Image (tube, rainbow, N blue to C red):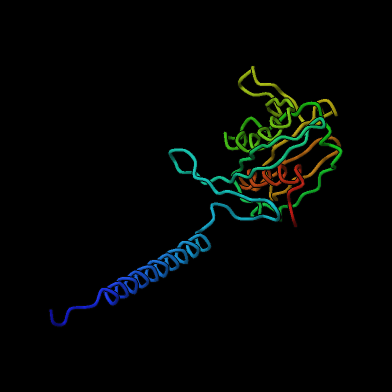
Length: 213
């Protein structure tokens, strides 16, 4: 029969097509791998670094409130364990707040948080920023007010009651946002309630020695 392709040539053509197909597959796999690698490199991380610490911005609750979470290792009574710290403000926002607290005041058996009874619930939330940290360290906490209130069930104590057994943390509204100590009492001061919350977060980060500045 005329023009019939010899079997050897047919086999050569098949092998050539197979090699071309394999080459094409390899190229496609390399392109796919490069796309995957680029995605993994450029993909936004769920956290940002503050010093050596990973900080995770989170949206919380139905109101979608932004909070910050960071995992860390706590040492207590010679043992280490993992914990998660939650706070309202990013460390970089509060790092420049004035801070002057005698470190020896962190040696305490119990913490009592107090504030003017006329303050609203946001002062209480600022105190909760610190009490949450204390609870992770197994330090008992109690809440009260700094002077007599309409509710007779509220505990009344102020800086004069502060001792090594019962450390008083007093919350104040003033014309400057700062954290400082007055003898054995720790004072968290804010120009407004938002600033008071920032001062509370500053105290927690300083307590944990996490401020890098």
